[in-house]
Every structure is written in structure tokens, then in C-alpha cells.
Image (cartoon, rainbow, N blue to C red; front, side):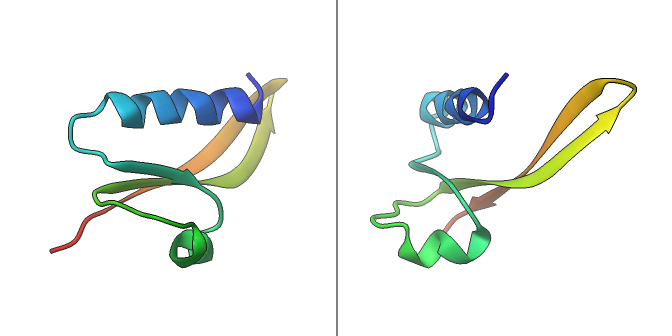
Length: 68
């Protein structure tokens, strides 16, 4: 899968979830500049790739935020 395909899958998961209002992708410091955010928020950021025995593992960190 490409990076864009993985992000699309994560977006579909977020949109299908009854509680998540916003899905976004990027560096964590970009959260404040990403436009209109409605909480709860699912934020994904890319953390690199590990190749082990010919298998490529793409690493994402998922952050879930809400207002309390």
C-alpha cells in the first residue's frame, strides 16, 4: 500500500467511528494550524519505515484528543 492509501484507510476508520469528529494527518505541531477542528480528534503522523527481511513496515502514531 502507498502512504496515501494507508491515510485513506485511516480516514475511513475515523469517519465510520461514531465519536470521532475530525481526522487529520501531519506533524503534531501542525494541529493548531490545521483549520477547523471539532473534537474528538483522531490525528495521525508518519513515524518512518522499517524494512525487515524484505518486508516494509510503515509506522504511524495515532493520537486521539478531546476537550474536557
